[in-house]
Length: 344
Image (cartoon, rainbow, N blue to C red):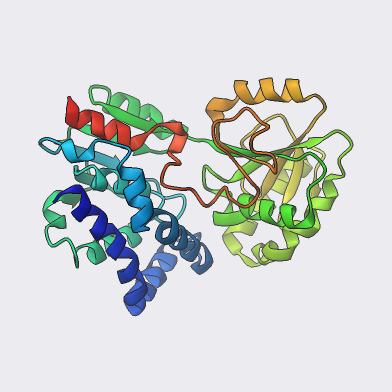
């Protein structure tokens, strides 16, 4: 298949996802039973972003034409280790490998091993040879390069096991938001999406906010409660809330809380589920230096002034969970990496 064929197949996938409604509902139900973190709302959100941002034929053409993909020689075999923190989180890695013409051996997370096989099934309706080039495996072997995503602990294993291969290895990252005090209620409601979507498990989820000196942090609660008060009814989420609040209370750590989120002043970027860290900022230059120092820990930065802050992936409130085709995890151009393998 040439590049145009591959893009046509991907564009058709969006159509088949809409057409095969009953089968998709069955796959979602099975995924939810297996993993209670995969709610219908969040599966739908992930799928919607894939359809609208990743599978537009026009967007795919513009994106792919930035690379010499039609000059691909003998296809390489790429091992892909997918994470399972949010529904279909590994789709973009698959998409890059598919567009570049690679063969794939994919190891799915046990937390998300139902949705992606269904997507492959739909792709096979247009690409009849897809299972000859893409294999779902329990153990990776016989591959030319690897893309692996996991936790910091898993990454140490990846570093050793894949030490002799060309690779992209990803570990824990979080996102931050910067407030300047002029945000509207609508801005803060969009910030709530950046924080709470997928329960905060994604690397693009905001886990830390910087607020100006003197900022009344309690004004966040009404904005958070407008669309996310239902989190109080989710058992697994509230188990995390209860556990981490108990720790804070036992240690006599100052914090603010409503019935589903705790706000804790902390210099740390990463925060536990159901906890949001905040820190006051006083001087813009000091904050810019801080952002540069912590760049390796951050996936993206959210604010209403994305051009003001010195960060590679700056987006506006409400956009963190809507990545585009060119929003590569950790800022590493996955498609360029795959293309370089073909050229070597």
